[in-house]
Image 1 (cartoon, rainbow, N blue to C red):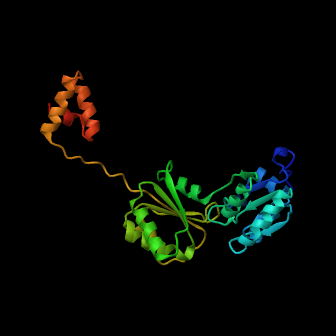
Image 2 (cartoon, rainbow, N blue to C red; image 1 turned 30 degrees about the vertical axis):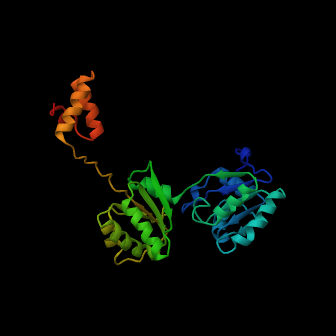
Image 3 (cartoon, rainbow, N blue to C red; image 1 turned 135 degrees about the horizontal axis):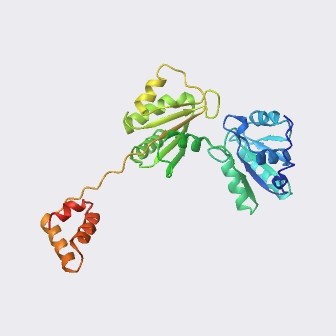
Amino acid sequence: MNLNYSSSHKNSKPESGLFYIVGTPIGNLSDISHRALNILKSVSFVLCEDTRQTKKILNKYEFTNNLISFNQFNSSKKIPKIVNELLSGKSIALVSDAGMPSICDPGEDLVKEIKTRGLSIICIPGPCAASTALVSSGFPSSKFIFEGFPPKKKSERERLFLEISKNEKTTILYESPHRLKKLLCELKVHCGGGREVQVSRELTKKFEEHIGTNIDEVISFFENKEVLGEITVVIKGISKPKKNFSYDKSELRQELLDLVNAGLSLSEASKYLAKKKNLSKREVYNIY
């Protein structure tokens, strides 16, 4: 491919002693930015969840760098060494197998340690499965809850699903393909089969799918199928229950009279009390 990344992106060259969090594609390798490629090409070395996955990016864009394994199995031993490398002036990039590092991976612990040492961190933003699935779902997205992978311990799972059943905000979960059917059945028990949900798989890849509209439908879809690919589950929040204040008509009439006697017009007083009591303005007005 032989692209010249540095010619138009000289300001993306890494500086010594800096730590870069680099977002990488969640499936389609064309989704990586020029800035991310510049950093991966130019840092002293790249920390990878799986070096084989990261090497696919380097091979596609025809450059090399020193790739070092950094994952849940070796992170505790490597964090002190990585910090020392930064202190010595090395520039280092962190990537995950897909998407943004530090979300559901040991990069979170490394970033925390680097911050406590007063070292500088720069994030090169990139794709994220959670936000990609969220905005594709059509569910409310201005406020949402990201829970990552559900816990394996039964009591913790029960607590999570109980919270989801009561959430008014959209909830996003990650799940492995072989555990998806179990997750869906547990969600049905706690949330009901009619709860709106979308399961997204293989995001940005050739066989990308968005399955749903509710839990029952998704369970039926996967019933006789083998679940494959990376899975993101988006669960719509419950509708906020309407407040239903019971009220005494005689007391409400007296409040209305008091406000009118205080100088408010009947319309203004009715509007004020309607908002206060969660009633319609017409309902309050007719009590006068």
